[in-house]
Length: 226
Image 1 (cartoon, rainbow, N blue to C red):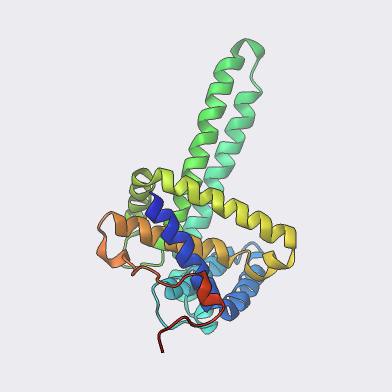
Image 2: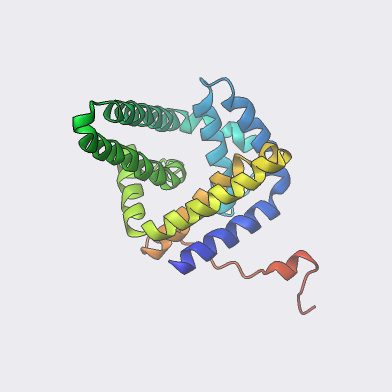
């Protein structure tokens, strides 16, 4: 578990560091496409396509944000729609169960808690589903099955990475400017790296990624031997 968390965070840092210019522009474009609501699938398809190219160390640029829309938009329409339906159903159920009469209050709280934790587990699974949807060779059904399997196999690492995600998103939101520049691309990069490390740990070779050998001192100067 520790190796998955460490490698996920380390790769995420260096991916953002190496492509910060592209990611800032992509973040701004994603925000623009998220605002009209109906174009959310386009925002997700472009966002995850670019970040997929970055994490898999392929050539990437701002133009790839638009190139990813055509082949991926229907897959992310399904993701966005399913997320919305699940969240709405769970929210309505929680409100309903907490509103039942007092003599059934305990059962209501139990049912509400079940709905709440189902929603939490489902949303945690999106850390894997989002990146896996970029792999068009996988059927949508297989994407969700693989995402659930990775979540179950690495639930501890997933929860810890989620806490890091919430923490850093909080810092970006507090700064204001940080959220505008990186608030959307950061979760996508983190999710891609978590998926790569979790799948690699399970022996799924196509998701394996070489260890990042750079350290923080490389931010100051190239510590090579030349």
